[in-house]
Image 1 (spheres, rainbow, N blue to C red):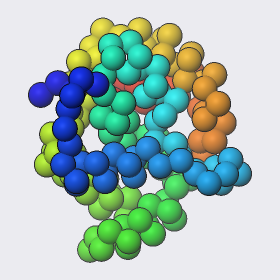
Image 2 (image 1 turned 45 degrees about the horizontal axis):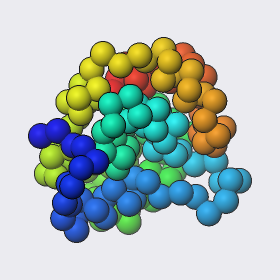
Image 3 (image 1 turned 60 degrees about the vertical axis):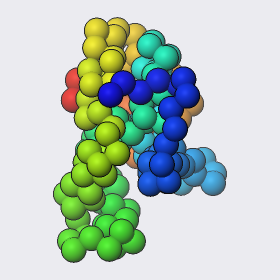
Length: 150
């Protein structure tokens, strides 16, 4: 399935997930991961992919990049979700399973973004105002790593 901006109807569970993925912090001081906004926006602009689905594709890759810097928050998230283990791996498994259930592609290629200019997107991502809010410094090499993984 290819997600586009044109007329896609989502069910309540998908909408809820995408709203959580796109949630913005209340203020700029709380240095939490922005779920790949600075990578998703220029990526979706290259092929007009669905905004929320593009974010959802990046969802596991950005937290994986941030790793230890967000571990305490991920443990709290696991508890809120009622997962058996309050761990990073448990949350990532939950995200991957939810994405599978609602048919979110696992990769940028699955979203139809193969052959994109990753160097250009990485350069744009670093300049995005949200990049400074990432808990781990996001430079072009880091952005390229996330893009390669996605």
